Length: 435
Image 1: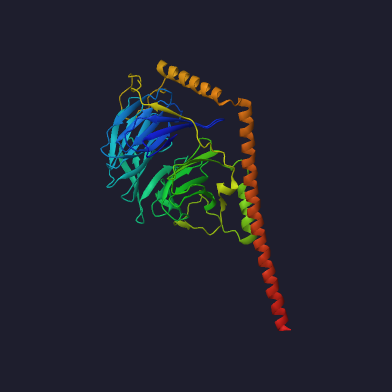
Image 2: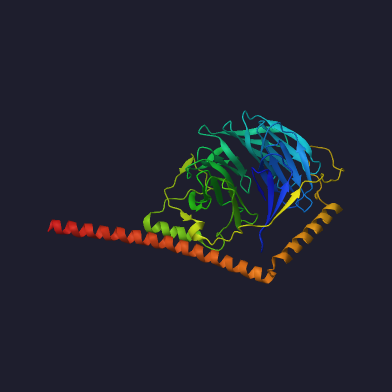
């Protein structure tokens, strides 16, 4: 799902034949969108000061959550899908009940616009960042701020927890990415690998890698265990505004100011890229002791671009598989959906599961599946042929990436050989002078 300044949010069907569903309801720019963990709900935030909860079906049923008094910058589900957290330019953070579709409580301490707020994996903490140059950690049970990290160099645009909930990463307007240990209240790692502000970060589900999106037009993948940049990705023609790994980590998507959404495939599983990079570096460098995430440094370490990363430019390295003109189905917002009322009192007590176990939902899903089936018939491409083409494209992606790595290795070997020949010529020249 994607959000845009055009006031719409889009849900994309990517398999076989690309198709887009446009959900219409917000009256101003949509600033944030996220699926619930079970994929049954979609939350969106907008500059129209509202949060909307959608059932992603052909009817476009949605509920409007009102409470903020200024533009909302982000919205995010808790990991159990029971709660929402929203961050706004009214300097507040609000926690909402998904089942009851109402505001539970607000958090106030930021003194400027709040750019982002995220739940910890266990749902007990909330991390937020603001243009007041602080990153705050909140206890949702006591509704109080328990920690605050200040960055005098600039404010954070985005913040998120790592999968284990022990660290947070912040994306800075001062071109930096920082990792903080919330147990020891200290800075763990500090990366300055971008040439402009960093707008978004996303942890790989393993917690070992972090991808960053920047106004400099690039995406960068960081190896957190070894504390270094490993990939630089080009593709957007302008600032990259957002990036997110898929649930399993095998893909990630990026969105940019160029109105493009790019879907990328990771190679963490198909290639032992650490070994490849290790061999590259040994040709030209002596390995430094690694900065391991689980060995906490006594003082912050600044990790610069001292080691060259692998650069990937889809214009040359990756087969373009995008659909130029995907069919778009427009879905207007209908009346709000109903949820059960038999909920026990208490702000953050975990309620029973299944918000959407209603007959109207099942009916909507069936009608949606029927509509999708009809569109598949109109394309004239058999499923077997579509699957075969998709498999061929995947194999081409693997081959192009392999060629890119081989080219990198060849370049490094040539550079080393050239250096050896120059040294040999110097030695011969010195020997002749001594004679």
